[in-house]
Amino acid sequence: MPEGEGSEAYINMNNVMRQMGCKEQAFDYTWMSVSKSVGLSFQKPLPYICDQEQPTSAFKNLNFVCVKYGTKYGADYVNKLYDGVRRNCSLKFDFICFTEDSEGLDKEIKV
Image 1 (cartoon, rainbow, N blue to C red):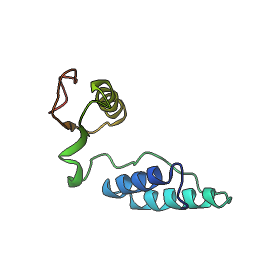
Image 2 (image 1 turned 135 degrees about the vertical axis):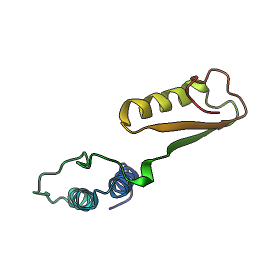
Image 3 (image 1 turned 180 degrees about the vertical axis):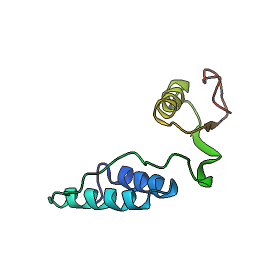
């Protein structure tokens, strides 16, 4: 996969799929991404959601962690990040923020 916009997202998606036990889907997803980047079409229909009902043990304690330091970014950036994770992650998780200033952070964020 060539470097550029989106390549890191493909890698992250592949890692998540493999850890959820969806190795075949992760393999197909990678080939679809590589094919697209070199101008080929990937013919196999691709489910983007893992059909495994129960997450593997790797996801029993899922944590999202961010760092907010200084004044360049305010609490609203962390809150938007948390809200995006909350909306898009169906698994139980903890959202943790390492910061020296917790003012304005959502009450569900562990500081």
